[in-house]
Image (cartoon, rainbow over all chains, first blue to last red):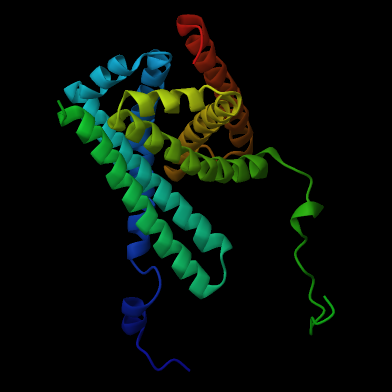
Length: 126
Length: 133
């Protein structure tokens, strides 16, 4: 017998309302990644065999700096959302799942900040 | 199952089904997604090497243009184009379009063809324009 009201259950558990947000984030990042990745792959092909100075000069171009940082942020948001879904689907042990998801989130945030900083160091440095 | 209390029919396991394009492509979408997530680490490494200096950058370039480096880059480029094309197919589904069985198979083959074309084109461009990677 349920002693809790439906509202209390909705507030405390499950994907009531908030699940849609995750769904939308995954789709929006996917849409944003279409132009960003096509641009990035094109640039990488263009930069193949380029020397260090050329690559640095490319990253220093203001709009390239912006596009690279956008790419990094959106890419890791999308990767995080997908990897979380995979963990939720395949890891059934509640504690291991929680630890894996927290560890994954910390790791993704760390490398996101590291890569943005790398781009900024190149863009703003001497 | 010996411990099963009621003799209810179990749904057949995965290996019972004849492989279908639809299920294969769905699993591949997820697999390429996980594989590409690993590939982002290379992007991070490459950017950090460039930020560190010419020596570190040259080291990264040497590593990436080695045999294993090229093989991984090729696998990542293939996965990227697959996940990108099939992702667009998924976005159409999310919008409620393309659920007819005939359409699902048509777009499935279209995604496979486009993936092969884009991967071939990318590497052909890299090699013809620059003579290597």
